Length: 251
Ligand code: 6PG
Image (cartoon, rainbow, N blue to C red; front, side, top):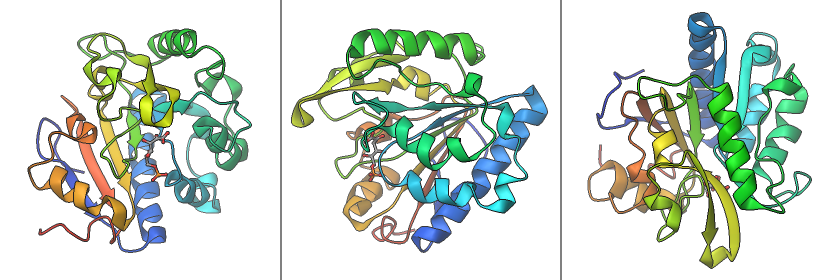
């Protein structure tokens, strides 16, 4: 794993989708094992969308299922749609169905913005309090996740930090509700203040439709995209890409 600090992100280019899932699962295992050894517990935020599903399927195979300290991991989501957990659109609901229900996760270690389908403002406030109460702070008292997974959309959004939305400018809150006009929907999202306090951030990006933005962000001119503003202050930022998402990179 690369050195921490405001360095250029580490880029891991996997080939196929299954090779990407293998690489991500291996990094997850390494980071979690280290965190539990060092601090007795690990705090992980899972990303949303469809890309994580292959990773969940990889993590529930025997080798990881029987070897990782699952009961010492506090799971969160780095953003959530304002829908019931039962919805296919629910990020935590999908994590619950594909991963958390298959491991020895104990109820106390499962955290998600409850009530988000009805009142995004109150759900974001409550979720922020759970994070503050559960995840130990770093030097500036901001809760410091051991690992935050993020995806990226073709427009360069990450979590629910979409271009042109209010949450991009939030500098105090750790979690905030964010209305996304083109979706005509409220979301709940980690803010940059929380994201950039993490020990490890791993972007997992797959697909040709993201390759142009991946190139702009990783090779220089992409600072306008929300995903480019995730720069962990004292953490390690890694982009793990499948061949299609990495196809326009020159290095
Ligand atoms: C969400 C997200 C979002 C997602 C990207 C990539 O709730 O939609 O968290 O940031 O990670 O849109 O989504 P895919 O993995 O489906 O391409």
